[in-house]
Length: 325
Image 1 (cartoon, rainbow, N blue to C red):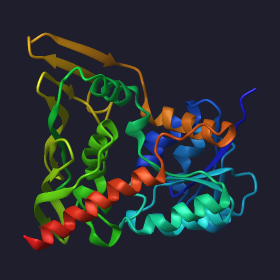
Image 2 (cartoon, one colour; image 1 turned 60 degrees about the vertical axis):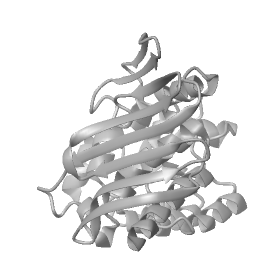
Image 3 (cartoon, rainbow, N blue to C red; image 1 turned 30 degrees about the vertical axis):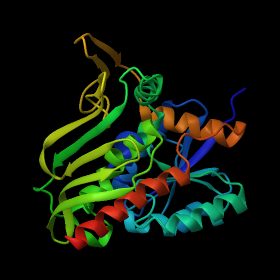
């Protein structure tokens, strides 16, 4: 019989309501047991889905609930480390939205806390749970595209009309690199297993002290990487791994079932194209199922804190390079 992991959510965020709530409720071995929010109107949609939901007026009260096994944290970026530590100190497993920290060095404390407590503490980096990324990694490792020479990655959307959005505010850790640079940077690292050796350039446009457009070029040991992230361009996302004998292209790499259907295309030198589609896989559901499996069965979790720290380190390097230009 599958054991059930009882979840609590700190804050009734829009994202938690629309994506995380349904994912928890349909994923095997997981259920939502409690929510912390002071706003009854924000709690109502959660209660409509889960009538037995316990509602707390503050985060600490939820953390004191002995019936909660794990906590999901969708708070503003600048609060992630603080509440991750508090949740772990309360004996809860923790899944915190990306970026789990604003600086790579902050994750050192979380790694130490994880190791000392035996709790699962992880970043909610959902894409590595999606089978399209494991398929792309398998294709790359097979050598079918020959020697990899370049990786190009783009992720953009336009939220200029919403200045109060936490992504547009410096005090909440906004900016395109913290929000979506984790995907363009992290996905290249995930597939290739390599780390950047140098940030060659970081061309960044700032508004209200947050980066709204960033073009970052970097060297990896065996290839050159280019990333464009923006909160001021029309929606677009794409990742291409370009080798001497072909290339692998992901056309909906990050927002599957929202932006479009997940597809991975393999292009060869003879112009033969093989496309694999993933019409039904939900990476949020898979994320919670993998989390539950790790907690109860000890199965290695697909996104370790060390992996998340590597991505954050690359973001830190990019901001440092931009400051030099």
